[in-house]
Image (cartoon, rainbow, N blue to C red; front, side):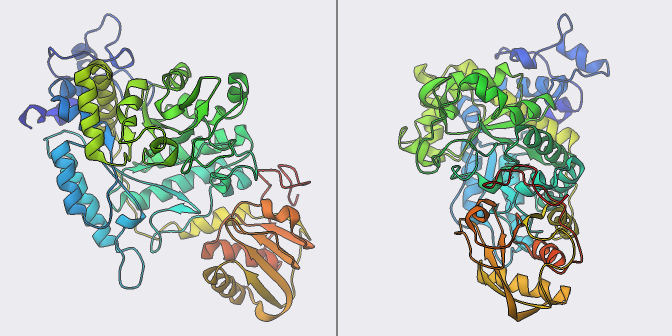
Length: 543
């Protein structure tokens, strides 16, 4: 669209002329008493407290004022698509003026060897990016993915495989978490991504938590806050936009929001003392995005998921957040069961969301937003504010965060270092060999056992005779063995009958290499439990 051309120039430091459209929202307006153009032209643009500065907000306000209603509705939608037809999805992005797209597992092309076809993936993200800019927008589209590490990673080999995020809590090292966030993001940037919906800022309550588990950094709100914020800053350093999730905290509810609506029964004081702490740290650090979860909080608004609750967004803004509030995926059971036919999309925006992620049908959601503005149930000014915030973030990202891409697999040494620092011994010797020159191995998947065997060969340990090492994968049952090893959340170790118990927090080849070094007595296990496991309290481990 011709009206949107030239906004890259505005984003570079010159704000556009005033328009008859709505002006910036209070957190995006000019300095008191200083016209926006003068503020940008004097060489000292005013920061907004979440990454962008005034030049970005001014350019976004100019752009949104020139948009049609249909374009604004598209600007606040980030959809998914089925299968590998990125070209068809790109045409939908162009037609509906969408902000970009998220890439899910079924959108990832594979090579004949079963690994990610990185050339095809880069071509697909490039096509989606061109589609998002087809209106002549002077900012990059949002091309996102869920790449947390551990169980949630849409892109596998040849990209680096990372252990579960709980590894960072076990290692309790902000520099290590920052380095990992940077390395994960650099590989994604090399494939054309600029948004990673990570890290999980949820504080897990323990084995009663059915959804987050080892996706949580820690059961300690302070460690989750410090280490999660460090991880996010590393992501930003590599040009990736992070999103702290799932506000107001999914780790202490006992229902999976993919299937139904969890209820968080804590009081506001209790939430602020625990679940909200990592989000407060992210906000205080000026991070750009927070994802709201589909969790009802009676202390805020009974029976209404936070993602569509005005009271929840009011609490988020009360905490000082000025950035983009993005919903969790709107095709999840907690939403679709209560709000059919994507009726939740305009409700979320009216409540305070700025970006609606993964509606069940982006066509239906777009039409619902347009209709809601026309019938007055979604105030036009609220849609304008949301579109401005998203455009402000995109302009800032395009101006100041060029992607720092690295080749796939370039983070493997760092991934192994994370596992080396995270591995935790709950029971058994802290020094010297834990097993003799040969062991038996059971449990886990076929791939887990093959990786264990490869690491054993490298460590000089044979497979076939000797004590039994049992691997406990995601959701696995307690084991009876000589050595029990949890590969995901460590809770199955509590009821495992084994004289030696080890929490590994990962199942990559690099994690198994770290494990066998400890079993062979060639390395110690410096990790500390980030959560309680039966009688073993947080902080337990070899000292």
